[in-house]
Amino acid sequence: MGKENIGVVRISFLIDESGKIEHISNKFKTKDHHEVINNN
Image 1 (cartoon, helix red, strand yellow):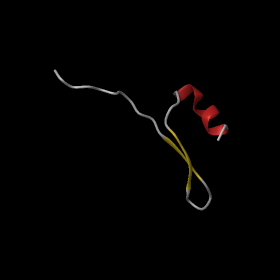
Image 2 (tube, rainbow, N blue to C red):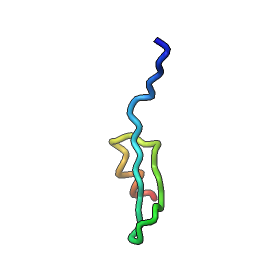
Image 3 (cartoon, rainbow, N blue to C red):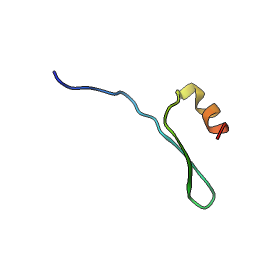
């Protein structure tokens, strides 16, 4: 059909108290999300 599908894309943003984005995570699996966040 000529169409490509990339599937579900998940992105998490770590935001500090002043509202600035500290880190963006986009390469993780849902079951490992808590580990990704704790390591940053």
